[in-house]
Amino acid sequence: MSNLDTAKAMIAAYNAQDADLYVSFMTDDACEANYRGAVVREGKEGTRSGLAAAFVRWPENNAQIVEASQIGCYVLMREHVTRGPATDGSELVEPFDVVAVYTFEGDKCARVEFIR
Image 1: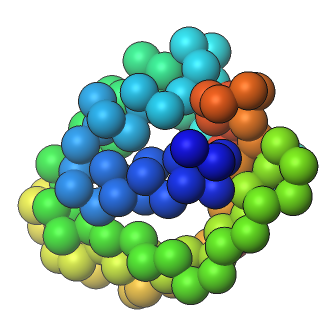
Image 2: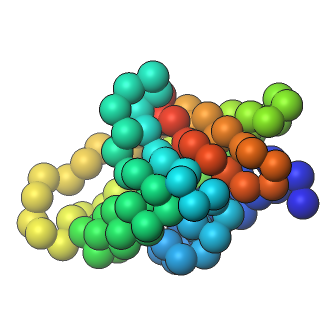
């Protein structure tokens, strides 16, 4: 499977709200971060627990791939994200676009950075 296919499989797992499957595509020390900024989910376990909490809060959360390409060990995807109503009653998050940069080490994703 190409890195592009793996990143697409990660989005499919995300949309199925399957945090375990999502992190199965990652290295043990992988993270998710803001582009050139703070890490928001650290390590495979931090990513798993962070996503699980987000899926509970936004059960209708969904990311659609608008564009995707692979350049060497990087996959770039423009995604359109909708959250839907939050279970905690917080204000509705407007749909938004994000560019995600997936960095691979071999066949596993080591880092995902979000540009928003």
